[in-house]
Image 1 (cartoon, rainbow, N blue to C red):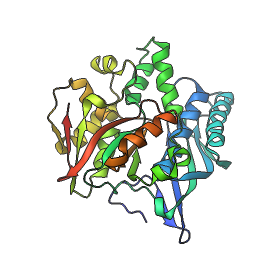
Image 2 (tube, one colour):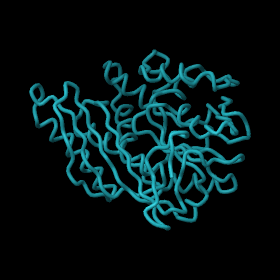
Image 3 (tube, rainbow, N blue to C red):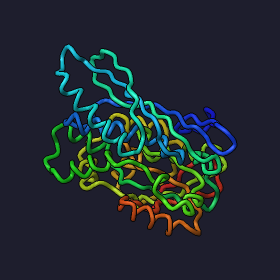
Image 4 (cartoon, rainbow, N blue to C red):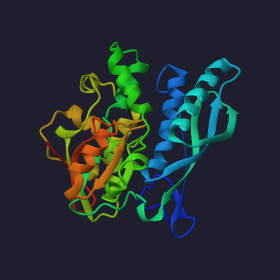
Length: 310
């Protein structure tokens, strides 16, 4: 069901004529100081790949790298507790896992889930005329960099970013099924940034996306932090990798362009939606608690590029 060509978020195969299985693995290094919060963020990030395919997570396994000779095991216990809370919240079952000794802490999950075969979201399913919805605000890479550099003293700013990263992308489980059928493609926004994951949507080279930078939902204070140069290395790498496929026709500040390339952790879902129902879908997603969900662009016939506009 999935291949290497379109950057799908997980492996998907047919179980029977009505059900498809989803299998994925993801793990990250610490992005915040609190170990329980890091565990919750890492788990939400891992579970997101199942949601990005339109599915429901069912079983998870811990994946752990930990320097047990240098760090107290109580830290690992807190990480695992945070992860288990998110797995439980998702409705999945945590069935153990595997750990190794590692100089740098790492944590994540292997996740198995299912999706009705008629409702699989592939990243390559967008159609000309579809509207693009982003469900979470951007800027977690910038905020995490500021936290590591001890350059943010705004507790609410930090807490809002942490809340966003800890929020499950469980829209496929909670949205009205009649509205789910209006979604033609989906992916989640993580390390390759908004631009990188959006380019996966036009990987067939017959589509373009017109992306409105002024409509991007942003975390509080992220523009100011980006203007100070607090960008993670992954953001610079994304810009180098993808800038040849991006046409900049906007008068928005350069910081907004940087944020569009920002490497995210546990970012939102990026959905291509039937334009006739896009406002209804966006309103329904906001009612689920994703209050920053926004319509940010439109799919057009093209050559596999993104056009940045105001």
